[in-house]
Image (cartoon, rainbow, N blue to C red; front, side):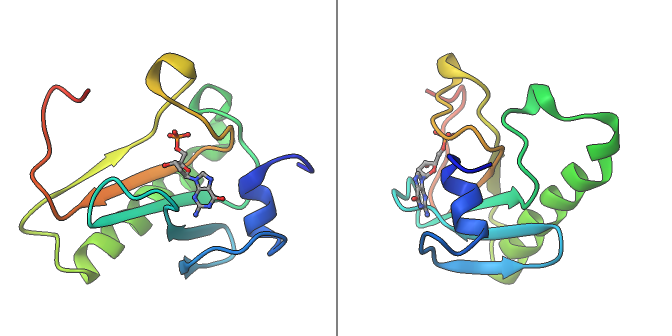
Length: 114
Ligand code: DGP
């Protein structure tokens, strides 16, 4: 999608600190980190919110989760723990309308989240 920030990162029209790439997904450091580890995992395909994910995307969504867990494990957060979040629409705080899994770790997380 031409106007989408994260599609531009996929197409290398915008810079990002990429930590993982494969045929279907990209992971990069969040520009405004909320924890010592804050990586965004996205599908290369444009899906604007979790509500637009289709049955055909089941494998892709699972793939994003496994990439995030793999990065957490590689960075040493498996035992300590980490958080995976996907905000959907304004009240949840979604600001970029291309689905992304936030991988957060390296500090004590609060529950319920703010
Ligand atoms: P959300 O609020 O859930 O839609 O999260 C969007 C995240 O994207 C937010 O944590 C900041 C991050 N972000 C926004 N613009 C950029 C960018 O240009 N580059 C990178 N690396 N992250 C961005």
